[in-house]
Length: 253
Image (tube, rainbow, N blue to C red; front, side):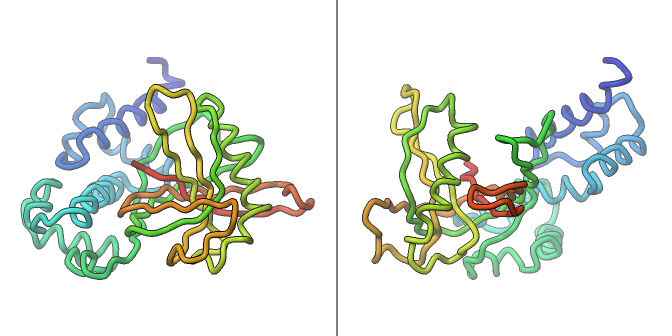
């Protein structure tokens, strides 16, 4: 490991270990793996990602707990223990500090909860000449969408999916009546058979019901799930020279 790329490798390994055992490992246990001081590693993490390491680990633990909280009938006490908290009240306090509501209120309200996404290191943030920044992770209750269905080759999906999403955004999104979030599209992917080389991709708008589906568009339904919000900044849009920003939601399974 050379001095030049050591920080990248250390942070990559740290992020991997956090996700590998996000449910029950403390910050101290992570830090013991690395050949640098605790103080230096914390400083490095904060400098690169802009968030304290301890806060990031806590946020990822709480995000991990949401799936059990919103999709199962497990007791809050059991969820707390599984996520590395020794006491239920410690988990509840941390949860309320993070999300502004208690775990019980979260279950009863059915509200969307914005969570901290896992951080990944990439060599660049450029997709098809556009700058992508984020992501933000959100846990959303079950809902309906209406959009345009496309069949795309999996190998081409990194470039083809953004292309058809932009096509839907400019040409078809206005046909969806009364979308819940007029400035957000949802890109949902479904592969009928893992052996196939292609997949269905549905750029769509979130709606309250499926009573009015325009001709040529398709509907979809999703249970409670995670989405990854990506903000896309385009220096020149397809319909003009102005800079525009839109948001997309990618299904995170």
